[in-house]
Amino acid sequence: MPKINAEAFGALMQLVFWGTRGSLPMNTPNHRLFGGNTACIGVDAGGDMVVFDGGSGLIHLGSEMVERDRKEIDICFSHFHSDHICGLPFFKPLFDSSFTVRLHSFGTNDATLYDAISGYLSSPIFPIGLADFKAQIEFVEHGADDALSIGDLRVSACPIPHPGGAHALKAVSATNTQGNESKSFVYATDTEHNPAEINASLVAFMREVDMAVYDCTYDDAEFAAKQGWGHSTWQEGLRLAMAAQVKQFGIFHHEPERSDEMLLAIEAQAQEMMPHSFVTRDYMRIEL
Image (tube, rainbow, N blue to C red; front, side, top):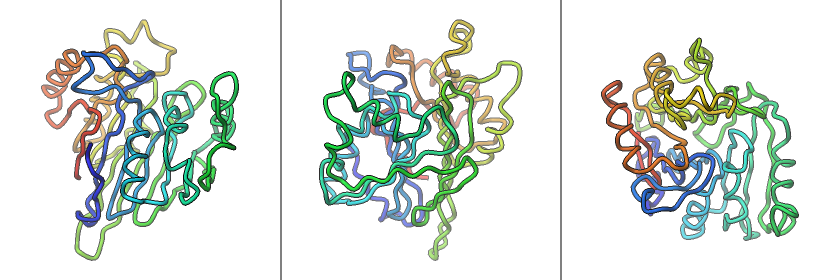
């Protein structure tokens, strides 16, 4: 398991992909290379950290936090579907009164983050509830146009089409006194594109960022049969990334049954279209 140690890298941004799968955690012999944890990415710059989404990959981040005795964490949610919140009841810091956990949401959705999590952690769905957590928990709601500052990290949001509402999230690090340049990362999942036109607002949001990941659940050939499910394709992700002149692009939110062999084939095809693209995998670490 990779160690989070961004302090050693100054203002460089470090990403840890704790979960990259979409919709449902998977664990089969065909999911060994890319992994099966659902969405969770840690963004660290100079020791300041924010987490995007709390899927099943959040479990491993929690163990890392306890090991390193890191007592505060900010988790920003793109939306509240179960694969993006299912790691919370297994997140060790929530059961320790010495921890502070801030849970952030952006814009207007069908329900508040508090309502979504309290509903998920209740009978008959789950045996424990919010009252069983010992940490200091703060629910923080932001407007769609608000920006959140976490030390030298600035987080902003962009509404994207998805049933119930969702937001792409962007983390930007500050330029520090050592001369390290600002770095930027966009997390755009879950979303369904319109085949007739590119999402211009998302292109603007992604413009020239150092790295972006996008909902690549399907491919273009599968999309017609899956319209209305709220997801997009890896080809559309590449079209967006190239239009926005993204420096690196990660294929993310893999369809649950997409095997290692299938994802390797997608990666090869994607790199023919955009050489600086790749398929994300659980536990990979990238320094920008």
